[in-house]
Length: 117
Image 1 (cartoon, rainbow, N blue to C red):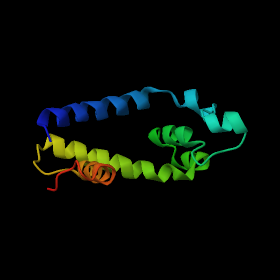
Image 2 (cartoon, one colour):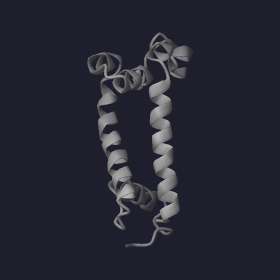
Image 3 (cartoon, rainbow, N blue to C red):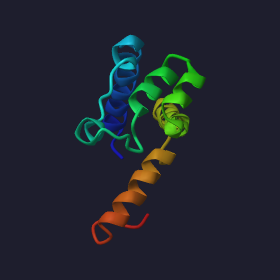
Image 4 (tube, rainbow, N blue to C red):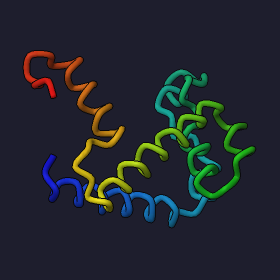
């Protein structure tokens, strides 16, 4: 993977993290953003995930789980991004777990276009 692309990815990670953290929790806490809920007046599996995510980002772990218990996947995703960022900073020639996962996903979708190795 191109070194330049890896550094751009690192900058994007940092910008997203800063932007999300800068949004006040009160902005999303009192609102339902789910289109499914607004159309059918019933919760979907993802209802409350945005509010749960923002609560988790602001350190309110128990409150996050009350909005949506599936927020447990966020620390896993955060670990993958953190590990990827660390490998970029270390200028590691190896693929990070996130890159390997992405490559595996692309191979599943487009098996004839991805080279082995």
